[in-house]
Length: 401
Image (tube, helix red, strand yellow):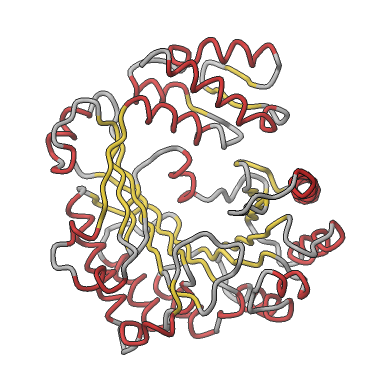
């Protein structure tokens, strides 16, 4: 049966690595041969893989597309137009949301025009901070002036949604700096903000952890006072009208395909369609307890470009019922409106209380969660204890499997 899905395209090339970034990326200068030409070999391979993956998983249309990285804005205008227009032209209906991530220091007018002409309707801008001292400390190439110029250029395009990324907790950052960042960005009226608390691969002190949390909460309060509703742990939509449709697929565990070196994808099955789906996918080997197929593209650029058997480009893993249930809670509770109970039941054949009844009762008594006929979600205070709730929940689920 044909279905819609989200499409994530990973462009793994950067000019340099920012020290807060944990995504797969390589230096673009090493790969000039596959990034040059009227249409680059890299983009031609991407478009071929998109067609192959759509056929393999029975995808009739991409209802959301997200081009991330790395630095997608390093693609040439010819490449971004070709890639986006090929996706649009191959289906009857345009994607509801077509996003490209950009670094403000790389945005040029010809790239923007080509992307919009190709069908892109949303840009996610990696601002992180507008303060030059803060940007320098995290080894960011750009600066305040470049970021403001990029935002001015983006706002010359009509009917274009704008999302701005900020990070709370960067070195040399203060509450005054964060306030200035947000208030300056508000003059451009972004439809969406992502405000992330700084994550680190190295251990940080409790004092630094508290400082990051305090800064993040300070930024959250400013956004909410300006009508940006928090709908997910780190994401804010103006008057709740411009949520990221693509990212909600991740949090709601809906189908999405990943294309490009380092990209991830997932295909999910519910209780009713499980047996039929299992029999149609070679990677599931007819395992009765498989509820999802997860795959990731290799991070070797040369192999990704040259392997003839495109199945060999991906590493596959299956997700069983217990793992899937845990993910459904872990991801669903990131959203302020929480888990849709009827949808959960259609997926697993029974209500959430069958798996988490004791934990839900305990946290209802603490007034940290809310349970209605349709929804289960955390209160604002409950979000502070998400990890503790999940610990209790996973212990209860362990007793059932």
